[in-house]
Image 1 (cartoon, rainbow, N blue to C red):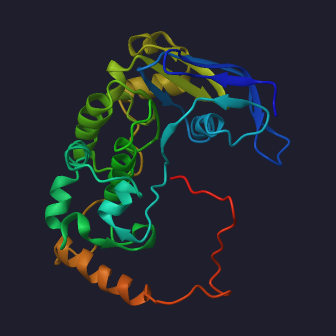
Image 2 (image 1 turned 135 degrees about the horizontal axis):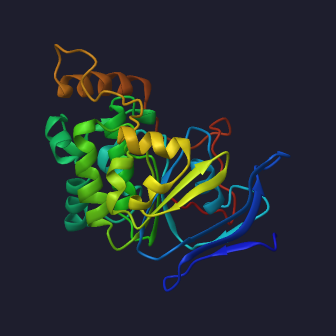
Length: 291
């Protein structure tokens, strides 16, 4: 195990000191002598050009890199590419956890899912295909955010959850979920929406896997970094947003979900009986699952 550590507990800040780490099996370092300090319960915006190290920072926090070990306890992670499995929408949010009606209603409300439920044939009991093929990119992103918010972790790693969301929903998610429902949590948000971060406690800008800015929103205007100047001058660099409108304009979203649900059920045939040796699924003694 590495002698280098990043630490966090419920009473302290997140502290990364002189972290040098690389991807497993790679010679090139992901970070060299990286140091970050984040106060508990704060909102931190992480910005930077594509490939600058934003997502790699989360890989460092999740101990997916070699050379540096973080001890942050339980983390809630919302990946850039939403993960959806074949099942109902509610099952995708709960992922095996106990259903708490009051908590669930609060979460789906702040994640702007209520209006979607009204358009689905079976509301949140509607079946979605593997990888969420029956959902839009924005719906997948909001389900992933709701899944994280349903838990009770103290640290939330939010890897650009607003990128796939329709522009009209961005402000609602930021205000109601990230700055509202999760306001007492430590939130580290990767985003291209710099204009949203005026109330952030800290903004970190990466370039070439190095920190070129670490401060408050109002301090950005004093930075000499070209990327930051461009962002502050244009207010926001818009990411590519997948439309949340239906693929067939003549169909309703309920029709689209229902048609794709039928196709999904044709493919996903259910079988009963014993698991055969060819099933490709094994459970080994002492193994455990964690969502």
